[in-house]
Image (cartoon, rainbow, N blue to C red):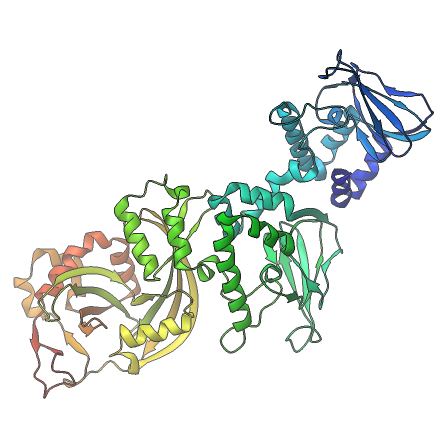
Length: 578
């Protein structure tokens, strides 16, 4: 029985106790009755061999006439007795000598209470079995009998648990949002579930592999050797649960490059590639998204070669997150779909989010509660001056003609940054940032270390949660002296100007006497920068709304003079009035 086989893989000791304390064994002679109709049953029977006759009558079963059914060996009878209060609806008698095992419900549940390792799976199985038993009425299903209860295979009863584990992956979560029936069919037809014992091998190196594995829990050891992987010597690493392994097998012809063995008992789900694609062919609702995902996964797999990327392994292929792989058209369909229509997003927010997707400035997926989740990939520059101050972008003129006083002055406080385009490597985004946003400073910048940061917040502009994945590039500036003919443009307030300054600037303190740099971005818009200490930046950034008015007054109080073409490299450059 599939369920007891899972018991054995989870805890062999519990299985042995089951056989010793719960199970009885006997031989039944020809014409002996195993049970009569209308009796309360307290044990499930496994008929190992022989021939039997099962009889139902109108008095105890929902039949119009007497019905006799031949029953061979290898059959479970009255399994409902283990999971519910069951009264037999027919009788069964041996036609030939047979071997019968009986499993007593009371003894089984005494053992379950004493064996934590199998308690959860047993209660889940029992609860779902009882649910299917009570629902087994026409037209939804046939009436249950002692031999058969509809929809009570292990796959049926534990599919909800399988689905819960499956949707931990962003892609299958999107499947579930688009078509829940397709996800259930996937769990029933393409997903297998098993427990792996300590020291069991999940796979060996160099094997063609046609299943993806989701290792839900436990500890494992992954090993690569020079004979099957691009490593100089044998490399082993510990792998914890909640990880997908060999996902490439679903989207390509994959040969394992390492071996993986369990160090503790663990729960493993496997998706068969052939069964998955048979389901995709038969399910139009998820066909498009699956083909796009597969094609792009395969593309990233074949491009994963140094120096651009690391070589792929069985549990890691560079740049294969859902946000990297799905096209903007698929995500726009997701935003517009009825699945997210009840998120409270307004029409204007939907239009704004759709426009961002069309411009490839963000990605969308679904979170674990099937709510829309916007993802923005950022490249951020933290440029440190010789005195420890950091370059901060504090405002820009938008919507103008390019002249310094035209357009709307928008103020804020942030490090120079840019949104990574879909599929754009982080290093390319940093180079684009240096060229397009701080191009005038680029020759003076020396790049250092890189770190990753993740920040999540609710975006009122788009009406959904937003996750920012930031690649933060540290850098230093080794020259801060600019000549009048340089392309760098500066201005500052003098201490003597203090009496005529607006009161709103008081909250800035000595910050208002810092140099302000002005550079033009790729749209020829004036963008303003200054230098903050880490504490000053954190204070203004954390209270940005309170400081916006002061920053605006500060920039408006600065004096700027246009240069003629003989004074700078570009006649449109602005020089400082110092």
